[in-house]
Image 1 (tube, helix red, strand yellow):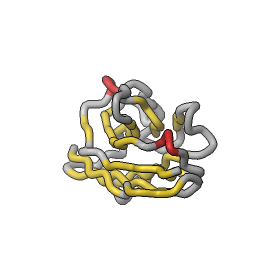
Image 2 (tube, one colour):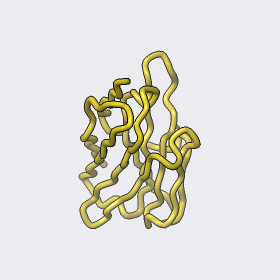
Image 3 (cartoon, one colour):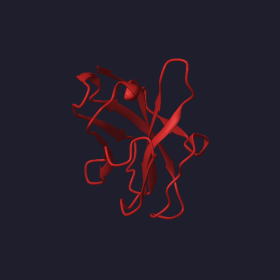
Image 4 (tube, one colour):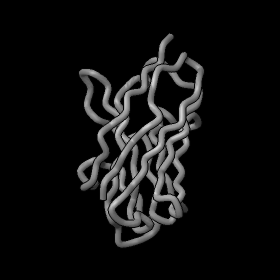
Length: 126
């Protein structure tokens, strides 16, 4: 599975950005998809994850109520809608994927994912 993240850029605090992660190589309907981020000098952290069916999601407390993960299995794309952005959301955002036995499984740790995209920079100015 190859993953291509896009949609990052420079945005003012309070603004919104939509990230997209396009998967190719095979259909990802049975794959858990996740978004992670890494800020300079900090460890990578999970932002959100979604099950293969799309019925189960996880959102980190730091972004809950502001970020929403969704997926379109027909297009093999996963989205991360980011609203009310803050300077502390500045980071490189990565999408990741891994096959799961259940269509309702969600992985919340990075080592569970075998496939990673190249990352897209999101910079939030104050």
